[in-house]
Length: 238
Image (cartoon, rainbow, N blue to C red):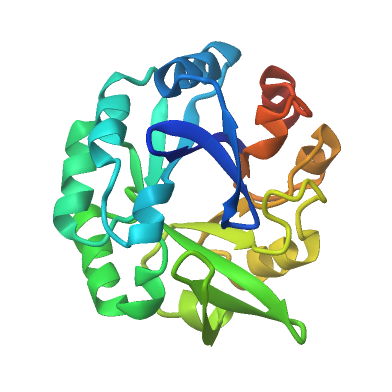
């Protein structure tokens, strides 16, 4: 399992949100470039970097910074936030990003996202679907979790037979350090065997990581708050 230490950026600073709420942000003193170097020094081969300003605006805001980080980072970057056009994708890939995350657009404009997959390839695009569990059904939320699509995870995933990577977040667990939604992740792995699923939301301990059976795991707040040591976490995922 690949561990993706996560770094969320707002106005060029490292932050973490609680359940995606911009009014509930914790700011950390780390320099973004130094943080990525520290991830690599601990043994990480990937990092997950999010432009939160771009995610909120629905258009690139910090892409100059992220492009610079991608060109200099000593590990592979999976980049998210405000990415809407092929030009956004091409610029970040040209700068050195290894994989681009597409979120709300996968729900709102499937034809465009299928075109991205056809042009750039399934290994360069990660679909990101954020879900709320409503009456037992994982319903996809969009626009930074502020809108409900009314469509299930399964129906959206079915639109992308050529996708290869899926970042799956249970909104209720994200940033809360309460453990992942193992039942959802196991169900998704069984129903969507063609997708390499990245578990996101709630990872708070080495035991959580050891229990996961997904292709990858995103770990953010637990790392930044010192609940998980990155080197130990990488060993747990090996």
